[in-house]
View 1 (cartoon, rainbow, N blue to C red):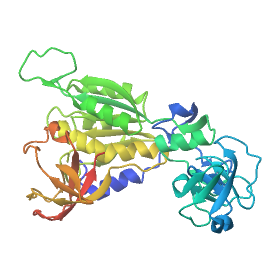
View 2 (tube, helix red, strand yellow):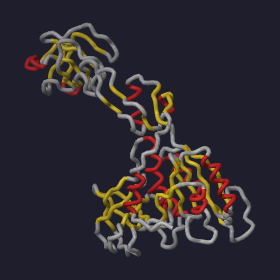
View 3 (cartoon, rainbow, N blue to C red):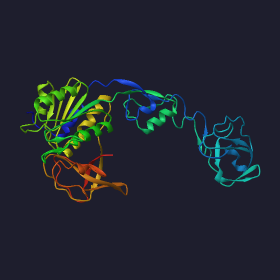
View 4 (cartoon, helix red, strand yellow):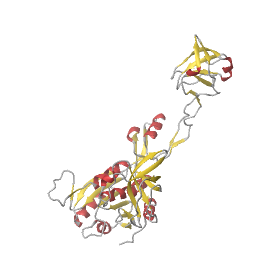
Length: 402
C-alpha cells in the first residue's frame, strides 16, 4: 500500500494531469449552456457601430447649449435610419438605442428640458458627449471576447447571440461512470428486508455533481461486495467512460475489494490515502487517458471528496480549471480541531456588511455519514494540517459551494 500524502500534494497531482482532450462538436447556441468553448469568440464588428443614444432625450450640438432655447427639428425613433442632421440652434428628439443624428455630439435628457410648442428650453445643461455611447463602447471589431476554455453561462450566450453566432464548437463533456459498492446497499425502489440494509444515496449525489460541474454521467447503480462482480462492473464502466467514480471499497476492510480490482486491471495508482478529514481512504488511478477515482463509502465523505477531486479531474479533459472558490469568512462559533490532517467542516454561511460570517447552526456532530449537513447555505471550512483550534472572531478559509 502506498504511503499517505498530504492534501496539497494530492490536489497538485490532479491539477498536473494532462489527458487527451475530449472531442469537439458543433452545437446550436442554445444547446451549449454548461459546455466548454473549443474556439475563441472574437467580435465581428464594432458595437455600437456608430454613436448611439443611451437614453431618451434631445440630440444637440453641445456648443448650442448656451442658446438655452432650441427648435425641435424632428424625431428619431430607435431603429430608424435618420437622414436629418442637427444644425445650429436646432435639436432632434432621440430615443434610447437610436443612432445619434449627424452633427450632434450630446444628448440632453428629457428631464433636463421644458418643451414649449416646437422648441425646448434647456433647464439643466449637460457636459459634452453626455449619454452618447461611442463607437465600440461594448466591444471593438476583432476584440477577443470569450477565449476557448470558457464554460458557457448565460452571459456568454447573450454575447454570442449579439454577434449573430447561431452555432459554435464546444468540447464534449467528459463521460463519468458511477457506481456504489456495498452488499448492504439498496437502490431506489428496492424493498428493505433487513434493518442491516441501507438506502444508497452516494451514486445519485455523485451523478448530480457530475451533471452540475460539466460531466456527462453514466449511472451504473449499486454493486455487491464481491470481487468478481466489482471487476465486471469496472470493466463495463471503462468501456464507455473517461472517468469511473466508485464509492466504498477503498478502505482496509475484508470486503473492500475496489482498491484491489483497480490494481489488478492494470491501472497505475497515483495516490492511495490522503491526510484529510473526512475521506482519508481515497485513491486515484490512471491507465493512459482513463481514470478511476475511488471515494469513501460514507455519504458526507464521498460528497466532500467528490467536490475536492472530481471537479478538477473533469476540468482537465476540457483544458479548464475548476474547483470550489476559496473565500475568507469570520467564525461566529469556536471550533476544536480534531486531528493533524487537513479538515473540511460543513458550516452555515451568510453575508453581512460586506463580509462573510460562518457558524455551525444546524450542522450535526457525528460520523462522516451525515449528508444532511450539506443542506442549506453551506460551505466547507478548510483547516490545514498545521492549523489549530479556532475561536470566535477568527478568520478562516472556506470553500464556497454555490
